[in-house]
Length: 288
Ligand SMILES: Cc1ncc(COP(=O)(O)O)c(C=O)c1O
Image (cartoon, rainbow, N blue to C red):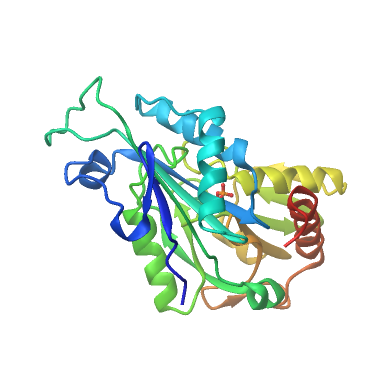
């Protein structure tokens, strides 16, 4: 059971989590007209803070949300939220929407954006990190701005629910003409003949913060990496498969639908990258 946090931040103030709310005509609620972020907290410190805020700012620009948030004025908000909730480990979730206005698809100008943030505990994934997980492949029915971390998550929700019902931890989206490109809430990597492969950044995938860190860690470890598309067949024939996200970090995948990947255990490059990611966290925040 994940305990409810005590405090949330809504627009300009801290409020008890149980009383915090958005208006009925918040455009995020009615239209999915907003962006969100999830960052990890390790030992009371936010990990990758500036990168997450920068992605939110870029996403808000891409969908023309007017707001006043920045790396500078968000930092004290999150610091205080983490302090009030005594959140040692967990996540911080935040969401920025186009604000409150009488319902109309055409969006208003000059309306104040709505912002909210809160922290949450995060489950222990040790067993999955050790043994790897099963994933399924789902048809990618999403739109053509998947590089924006928008709160429109219905295709992701449906795909991940189908995965859960089949005893899998993630659904991988297969996009016609491109191949298998990312997960419902993660980026995808394969290893073949010692080379790491992940689909390139485009409007088809989210530019994952963890994906970027892993590519940097691979370069530092001398592991050759290619950013290119791969098919379902290449995925199934890979030597290693793993997914990355803020939450699952570097998560080995040992089964795709009913097919076992290689010999069914996490591979050596996945292990190296897991260890290096762990070391990076430790260095940033004094360890788990
Ligand atoms: C669709 C999608 N791709 C990839 C990711 C991984 O991104 P990050 O590493 O920044 O958490 C997420 C995270 O939620 C996501 O929703």
